[in-house]
Length: 216
Image 1 (cartoon, rainbow, N blue to C red):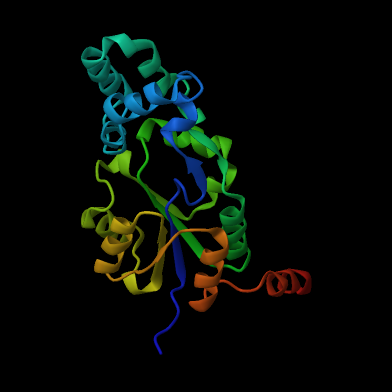
Image 2: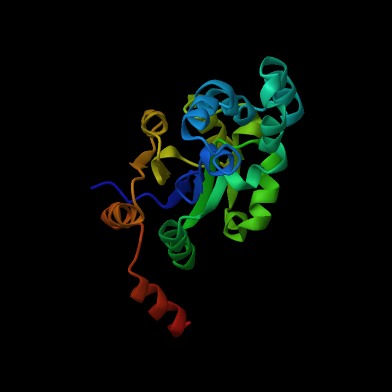
């Protein structure tokens, strides 16, 4: 049998934090049909992807406002109130992250995330600051599932793909991680993630961690 991966690499959005553009815009567009049209035609996931890929908020919002001037005030909220696209942490996942850290497992992150919003998000959710290293797509101008972002991660932190288990909620990102040689887990629920990590030998029982800390 091959050795268990020794490093756990997390995605952030919808693995550790609940994220959806709808969380913000449903507060300002009451009509469900109009909201669906707005998200499907104006502030789309593809447009948000430009921010993940390194576009500035000033440029992205100016461009979208020029195309949809009737929505100028609402589009501007995507910068002014961006943190409202996050409804909070996924507690079960954060608990797993903390158990891994308590057991001495090295933890990293690779995230598709706008560069301008990452530091303020870390300040609001301090567990994000505990990673040994993070690759933020908006800073690198490379987004998952590009193989280049995984290659950059391994090179920058001097890691072997075979030592890493990668967790993501997007199946294309999972496939890309496997293509570079990582073990990859598709995130669905914290309970399933815990089972998958235990099966890999990465996640000890909480009682074992507590016992080890008490003995120390």
